[in-house]
Image (cartoon, rainbow, N blue to C red; front, top):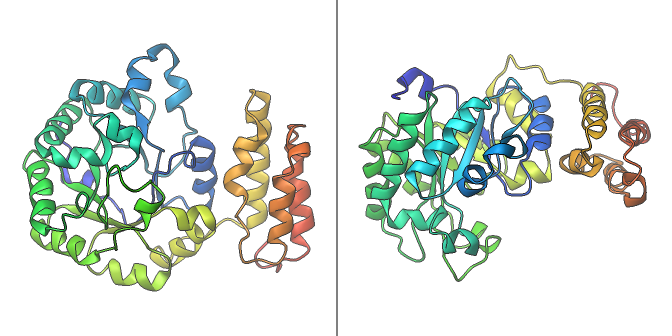
Length: 337
């Protein structure tokens, strides 16, 4: 189904990247408390997990319904499986479907999806069309600049152009190449070098497309510079390592935004943990995204140590969150609390 341009061009100035083993539903709920304006992406879910476990979709797709624009990222290369998985995602309340054409891991390389799909833009176009026909929500593509050590802008432009020609108008660009089979995923986040100029050129060549830049964004000064040239920024590891930058960035991008006081965030997360633990969820799954919440604050190490105390976590008592907060709050300014 064709999605109108106004829906596709919603406010996408700031997104948190999909991160395997990080952006699960508990993490998304926590991040949503730090800003309702930030766009949030699920970790990549492989289509085979969904089409082969239809009776257990809740396990893979359920998330707490929040105000944020939440995107389901799918990994796969079969148009029919992607379309079916996307329809599942729409049913569960996701606001957008994203096709992963950027992951460089050996797992996706063997499965011929992720970044390896950049070698087959016609297949990506077929996948996009199949998904678009199956859902009424926007469909986007996340990809790299290129593959291995081919640094040709023409390769990137042609890849985007083929998918653009079948209707895609939202591209999330990790501004470095993916080196397949030679570098591990961690190294692929740092090697080869970033090249923002190629992303800026894409925006010039496809001016009515939404272009979101991902990779190496660490501070507000960089964000302000980037947003003069493209439509949005996506940040991953920097958010994972310091979640409160979500509030800091949102306060700059949306001046009318008033963040929750930290005490309220902690109370909401404690109440959330009580509900989840009562349903059999391990407390560790809930507190994990909170560990770096107070990076840079006095008492941050104590907070992290208390929430990662395995002997306490085994008790599955959410009150440990409030206890850690009580000990930390003595170090914090009243205006922050």
